[in-house]
Image (cartoon, rainbow, N blue to C red; front, top):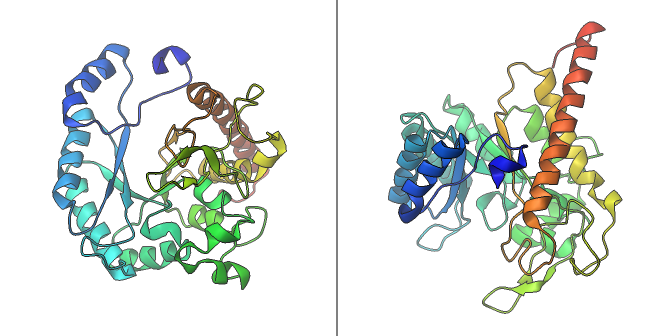
Length: 311
């Protein structure tokens, strides 16, 4: 299906052991590389799992591994910035010996859900002479805009209200653009979301709570296929950040961004229980990304031609 869609260059997946050979065989048969993968990890528990997944990535020919590091250590305490940086340095050392770049993701339920921590950890890593590489999934930023309850997670709301953290992509100094301009974004996930994204009331977690709502249909859904009203203009903040990312990469020949994975998914906090086609949304998103990339490249050539600085 992915190959026949004609808009994807690769698969993004880290397979469980019982799927590994089948995925490798399918990748070869369809001439579709498994360029990227990823997993979630608990510090103090999952170091061996990380090593196993990096070996899988190497065998699959993957170039990057997306790392979701949960907020708490295996013993229950909240990881400090220094502990996250130490885990990053360890992961970087191991993965790079296998030719795989580990990219730490901005993501809910992870250390990075307080977005202010990203720059602090990056500074600690770079102070050790190691480049900081991250996965930008700005749906996690966008859905917290105008969403006080979600901003309260990890006590981020106070920093937002006093202006220390800017979420809106049309405002100067916003966190996503700071990460992009710092050349930390090596990998990206494209999953549409809107400010104060509606909770996913068609799916519940085991504790009975509704999905947090970090996915919005990219294309207009059929009547009744989505539980809330759909308005295309609400996608503009999400699209704005993606355009910023593409423009930055197009104008910087030394930029670190290597690929973007379309990641509309059927998990509880995302699209579980909905009636629209998640696969079709990924195809539509990929087509949009390709068009925006061509626009960004044309704009970059225009800047070069007029003698503007290539940054």
